[in-house]
Each structure stands twice: as C-alpha cells, then as structure tokens.
Length: 187
Image 1 (tube, helix red, strand yellow):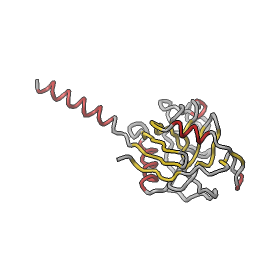
Image 2 (cartoon, one colour; image 1 turned 45 degrees about the vertical axis):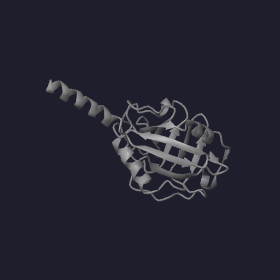
Image 3 (cartoon, one colour; image 1 turned 135 degrees about the vertical axis):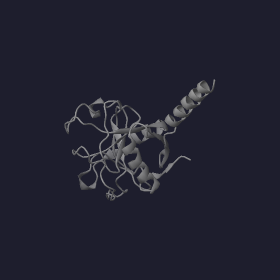
Image 4 (cartoon, helix red, strand yellow; image 1 turned 60 degrees about the vertical axis):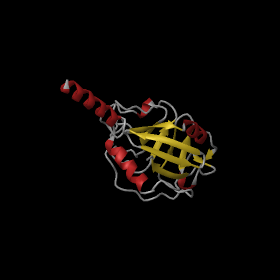
C-alpha cells in the first residue's frame, strides 16, 4: 500500500514540475502578451531570456521587424533604432522536436549558428523552413523556447501595423513604434 501511495505521489510531483514552466507577461503599447517559456525543453534559451527579463532589459525596446504572415521580431532596439548592448551569445538549442509553429517564440540570430543574444521572434505562421533539419549552418534552424498562451490577438495586431524602411538599412520597421513597455515574470 505504501509503495502504491509513494508511486502516485511521485507521479503527481513529476507532472507538477513539468507544468511549472515560467511565464512572462509582456506589456506592449498594443496590449498584453502572455508567454510560457519551455525551461524543460530549451533551458539555455529560457535562462537567457529570463536574464534579460529579470534585468528589465526589454522595457522600452520595440518590435523592430514585422513581416505579416511570417513573424514579429523584437528585443534589441530602442524606438530610434539604436541597438542595445547585450550579454554574451548563447548555444543554439534548435532541435527537430521543437518546431517554429504559429505562436511559438524563437531566438533570432545571425548566419552564425551560436550567435543569439537578446532578440527573439514570435512566429505568425508555421514556419517549417526555420526548423532544425541538420547540423550545417543552413540546416541548424532557430531555437524555439516558448509559446504565446494569451494575447495572440495582440501579436496579430502588431503584425498588421504599417511598416517601411528604417534608418541603418533596416527593413519592415513599424512606421509607429510598437513598444515593449515591460516584461516581467508572472508571480
């Protein structure tokens, strides 16, 4: 009897731990986006994102790249398109098990596989071409580390803003800034 009770309690605690992923509340000037971070599936990316969140890094930054039907990208630039200094680059955790599906968050990076820092994007569609397919720089993909659990209507509203060229050669920049007013862990 004790063994059965122990097994049941162990099973319940394991299930609760899997459901204990951190949640970030991202307030924007367009509305609130609630994001579950998958610490159980992408611990390096989540720890990195939370480091920026806990240090109020994202507060006042913008979504600087908006492409309808593809993604919205933020986490690196002020409203006047000045890039903010970042922490060190992290290892790319892209895996075939985590797909760039609509509503997921992924780490933005350069053509260098392990170059992600603070910038992230929210997928507006199932972007299979961004998924991990092999170990080459082209096939490595973009590390998915969470998903929007509330506020996809806000994400879609951001996706619909007017865009144009920005200073410094940036493309697809909202003509009126879409500002992250705050990003905080849900308590």
